[in-house]
Length: 105
Image (cartoon, one colour):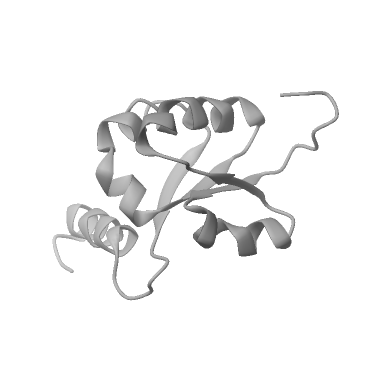
């Protein structure tokens, strides 16, 4: 991470239209120009010191193998968010965890 860049515990990854509001609020926002740039951006986020990275759901679904590479690392935690609202990947993940833990939804 460059010395003049302030460390931010929360990062956001998505298309420019999805992350611009987060950037305006002072979060570290990473705009994805294309899926081929994803691996490099994930590495940048990983070394940035971010603890949590919110990832636009479409990107999260498009490249699960890229995100799985970081699953065993303590940080950052990559969590999907739905820019459109409604039930998304995160809600589905929570249901699966609850089912495994309790045997019921």
